[in-house]
Image (tube, rainbow, N blue to C red; front, side):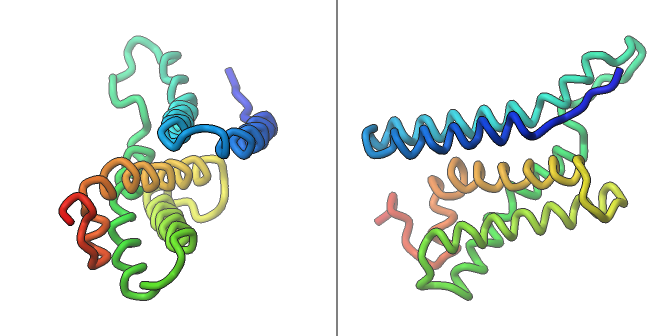
Length: 168
């Protein structure tokens, strides 16, 4: 049984989602926009789990384990920790930079750290589907950790040398 993965439908779906997003953002309230963004992130996590659902076809003697492969779980852990490095880098090198630039630096650090982990863990230096999947997992973990863990807890502001808004 072989499976093939084509990114063309996903690219068309992403283009449609971006066009719809640009139409709806000026009309909707901020809370609704945030809820839609979190829903889209959750849907992307579920899409990353789809290849792992092929494990259901394993023989009965197979040993049970995690839903995600170990390499992908560790890529997620790398992604969860890279925002901390990005906060320090941004506070030391670009204190007055606009937020979109700081966000790009965070994504770049997350992608590079996950790519280094992927090269070390899989012993493959090059670009293939597994590398892309692990890098996307790390970047998604980084964005999720920033938005759901580090920023609300005040760790992001403290590492940047600011006073957290909740404590001010």
